[in-house]
Image (cartoon, rainbow, N blue to C red; front, side, top):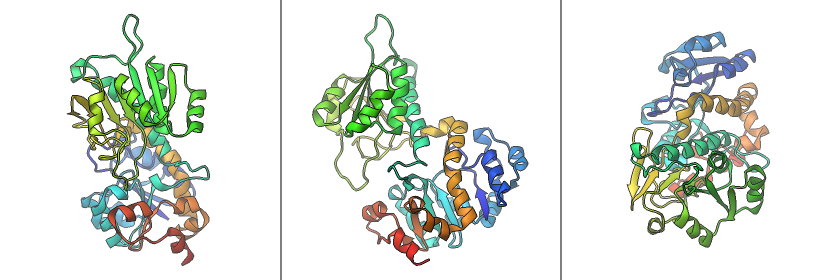
Amino acid sequence: MIIGVLKEIKPNEYRVAATPTAVKELTRRGHEVYVENNAGVGSGFSDEEYKEAGAKIADCDTVYDKADLIYKVKEIFPEEYKYMKKDKILFTYIHSNAHREMTEALLASGITSIAYEDVDDKNGKFPLLIPMSELAGKGGFLAALHFMQAVHGGKGMLLANVAGVETPTVTIIGAGASGMGAAELATAFGNRVNILDVSIEGLKAAKDKLPPNASLLFSNRANLEKCLKETDVLINCILWDKTRKDHLVYKEDLKLMKPGSMIVDVACDDEGAIETCRSTTHDDPIYEVEGITHYCVDNIPSAFARTASTTLANATLPYVIQIADKGLKQALKDNKYLRRGLTTYEGKLTLLETAVKHDIPFVSPDDIVKEF
């Protein structure tokens, strides 16, 4: 199979889907890999390194034209719609429920698309999302550390335990991969850390991993209100069902928070768990509502591009190998977890959440496979 690795065009996106090490593994197995010029530069990987790994370096048009499997990081932008074709496979983060126009373009093209974020495993986890979630959680705390500084417009609070000063309080919603990433750093800096989650088992697991300055609380309205009143930084680390119209933290709840405190929304769901959150960029990362600073950058891991690219490639490569070695249809038949990431197939929408949100007809991926 021919695999094409593209340079991302989203502003401030420096990750690349495949590292030279991943390329070497694919070429070793007899597959051809085309890498776009300078695709890995933002992550510190040169074209020469890709060549040494067996890749062919080419321009964007050539990579898209040659590739059977398009191997990317981010969703498809309008400039890339023309490259989506029925005989190709797209493997990337798609987030189809957040991008209706893109989803319609994928459907119109007839391309087969598989979303990293919807591939799960036997434990109900999302192995292609978890590496980026951990980085996003850690990056979210580092962003708070940065924007709480007076020189960056914050109230001049160091998020750390300093003798003679009241210890800051950081509240984290969600004890999953991103929540634990944020908690690992927040506790290590000596903050008072509250972690809210609806899973007692998840809270118990977090308790075993974190130091005593972490308080593990069941997520209910009373505990949330208590935390809002005392927290200096609120970090949201839960994905919100796109079909829901309610929120965990409403605009009116911001009045409970301390003036000058901060909300970091790692999930970046527009009007999701946090009603006042909307996606921002690394170029324009923060805004203020009711005196509360909001940071909602939707690609935090890109700031740590080399680390992110390596961990992402480590996670996605086994699935790319399955598709390349077996062929698409056999890979989807053999791996029900990969099948759950199927988003579009020959003009059919195969992701239920997106179908419900955008009122587009849905076809089960299991039914698609039965026709193979």
